[in-house]
Length: 404
View 1: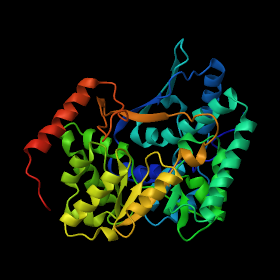
View 2: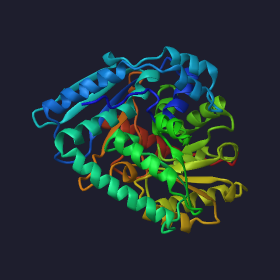
View 3: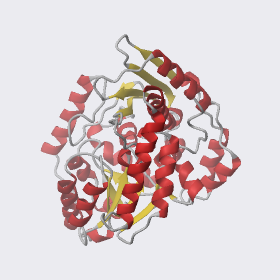
View 4: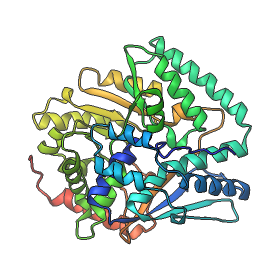
């Protein structure tokens, strides 16, 4: 197969925003990441695994070009010290560990500094996904299906059938292929409607290539590692430590907070007046999005903040129909934006892979996410999950909430 990842810029933007903050504040942290395919019955043959390893080796030989570094340096919140670090940075194949079992399950782990391993997540998932679909199906047939559906979606956007306000493409990690993602990004940038403004993509490489806005701020790993990586911290305060470190790095720039790492209700205990004012908005990634949005509006109002000045960014398993319903529901109550992934980058007759790669250890100990819904967590130690859950419950039941 041709090389899948051909540029280190081909990563989601939040890997650079988190990467810069990691470099400046947590460069000594070490993490372990684990791959999981959540689909039942999916098998990875020896040939597929061999090709995945080959693609990872080619990815690890890449370096940033000066043109790419100049592009990053022009992003308002990226600092020259981080650009200088990236000038020297290169992925390490030695950080990757592969195995499989007789049933065809693939196991991938990466271990090393958080600076390194964080950057591997998205390219690894993109490689695994594309290799799997190219080697197990008639790729040309799938791509033809994908193009037909993509054009239909774009035409409906242009005709005003959907109301998406501001929306971005977030599909790098589970895309059918690099070719498919580039096709949809290019098409969406050509089809325009005042009700649905395509503002950019999380794929920094494609944003650069097509003159679009690269989109993204933070992921669950930030709250998990900052909040739980220092073992002196009570993990029920993960959001406070993570948000505080983010503000220390970025001030009022680059500020969309992720709410559901250790439940949204616990997040709101820390997202008080200062953070709610400094951050431009919040991102939804699990649970009922309508109930979540109502809760966030109520929270802003309780602090005396006009929710119409804040953005609710929805990014959980969206399609254009669901996004339109959300947009109309919250219209004139707040700003609304959408990050839409697999629906845009891998829509064919074959169900997409539900693959993830999550941080499972930080500084030698377990970390975990306790989401707003079951099934999104990934931790190898149930005892730690139980401990984290008890810590959250104790805080919620015993702490007097403060409005500061």
